[in-house]
Picture 1 (cartoon, rainbow, N blue to C red):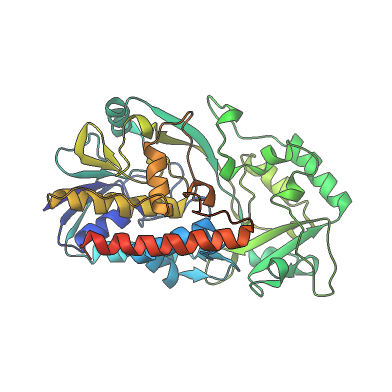
Picture 2: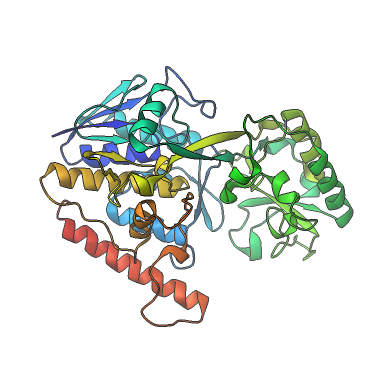
Length: 433
């Protein structure tokens, strides 16, 4: 059995390794290192662009944490790599980006059933194939996909700046996670009311980078630029990126607003400005973000950027098993399908691989039901119910409990237990492990 996988990001890498581990001969195509998209710079596969966080860990209170547990049950390469390259981040799962990409790349290159081909694919090949080229798909392949799928949609995505640890003014910040969780995983940069007001004023007047054909309605809510959030009201940042709730210094002092910094790498010499995705010009980022007292002399190792992402109008062209309705041998995976987020993209790669493998075996594909996050996301990309938008993992997309559970914590725990039980049954019934 043979298959071509186009794209070696999270989804493509998951798909390639899953299939190769079952004896399928995989040709994995990627443009790296010969060519890079505007958002990529690491020659390794599986480069994390916007953030080094894979979101929450707890499966019983966080839907993305639940999805991670489902993926572990299904045999996820992403979860394996994340465990090996984790950096402290309190209740979140964060990784050293470079180590993570290197780990996945070595897994792929060391797999005897995967042939890596570093070239740009301009046309969808015949036969079994998984397209996982991501939201920055461009050129002739983008046009070919658009042609067979009846057009594409898009939204704008942004990434946050990274600063060096040694450039921070540690006398004006403190370690600690919210509500005392996670020990010293975060560096907290507090502001007084006056400092906050000055910061917001300058943020709103700062010059933004130009985006061609930009439409503010196309910004994805899950990756909102800080300057756009600030425009929604005086205190909007204090209920979002600069939320002070649950944060106090060693003397128990509380603050008006707080920016959290999260480790970017295992060495702890680089920190990410949590939630500070931005489209400000680089000089403006330096000027405005340095108004936060702890960042007064901060060295910016990377500035935030904003780029246009592309995704399919999936309900019009894809089945819930991620196959193209007009071609049962062609599958799509990753953010291109309208799942949004690192973990969600990787999960779709596993699912597309499972379905492709089942079809190659001459068996019917089997989609997890919507009591699981995997199944609910699969249903979302195939269900036409109005305007189609990218979807993150969330408890709201799961099938409602069979009985009413008023307490939110108990309801989430029930949904998680049910999902884990059902995804375990799903794996067993596939009979391919």
